[in-house]
Length: 391
Ligand code: NI
Image (cartoon, rainbow, N blue to C red; front, top):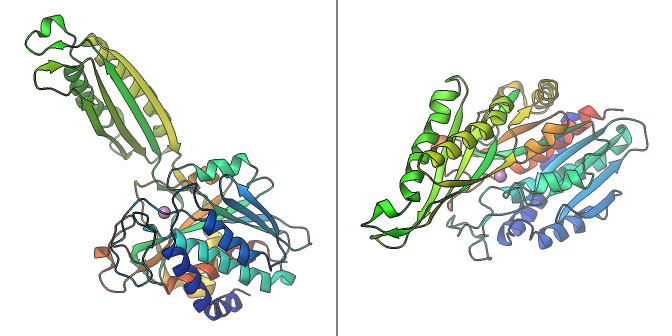
């Protein structure tokens, strides 16, 4: 059946490309994906699916039921675009100024739709249910959690998803067991001192000096408190204080991002950050207000699920198309699903055959995607579900 799905996917290549290009021309930001969702719905409606719309924003949950007892296997695609001005030069570039599908979620959406077409064609040979999740708001780390809160995972045994990878040649697929993408946490810090004349520091409490010490102190969170064998990043990306050269301001405002590769390290970070921020602020006579927000857990692929994916890849495309998936500190809110149920997230090559390492990466204004990955991605998603729901 897997070979049949692969052959069939090639027949859908033109439809998938046209659908993807339409989305590419009309990108929509997180939580604003109303046109995209309407286009998806238009395509899903002729298939016999149980459809819920408006799930976690503009998300769609579509169940393909076989009527035979069996597991519910979920497949997920994200639909949102980014606030980036497109410079790709493609003829179907964004018509929505300042918004671009620079992460290829247009392609992911098309692939999941293609998987729906493919699975509909073999429904009489499947058991259980395939649940299709078209998700909003991945880029702001909100969509997956919102869909889960509205029941998207209820009764689901396993979940699978993919992300195109422009630095991997199209045709190749990367898989990996265990942690593959970093956790994403956000910190917001306000350091409150006492403002006054820049020439009379003794009558002030200087929040800039205290904050500078905090920025430096936070560097030891990773270098002195986390094992060198555990990757972690603490970056303060914004530091705002003061308006005049000769005035000590009353407060400083900092924000930063924290990435880790293990749930245990991620759990330790809030305590470490809070201690460093609060105690250094105290040493400089300032008050510290810290807000620590967990945005994404570490993305951890389930080993058994990766095994099923590997088997599907080998059967459909050949062992030579499968490579070890790269790790990245970038986050992905698919991790929220994997925190709750087993499953796997896969890298689908979407880059040039030569020198893919030098291709423009995800979120770049010149990012482009090799559209030959569209039928392959559709076939892969359908193949995994067919494998797990084999009658
Ligand atoms: Ni993405």
